[in-house]
Length: 116
Image (tube, rainbow, N blue to C red; front, side, top):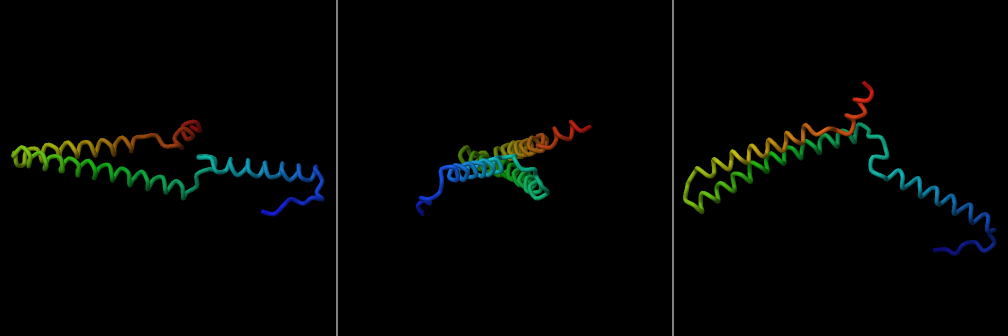
């Protein structure tokens, strides 16, 4: 780092410091979550994120149910019964999770309701 200019007056240094403080304040405000208006790109990214999460929840529920049923059948020797039961439960859990994600209010829904 370079040393400050020795010939600079105290008022000039204070002005530079105040300028730096205001620039830092503006930068911190712009980086806060939700500070900038969501554009089309952010809305698309949010929608894709929700869609991928819903698909992952659905697939995860089905896979987990099938795996638990298969392992339970091998352990207890009750061939297809636990597989079918846990596969059904996993499917129901996956659909329920995806449904709950879909009916969750979005960030713009309150603004839209206030305008009507």
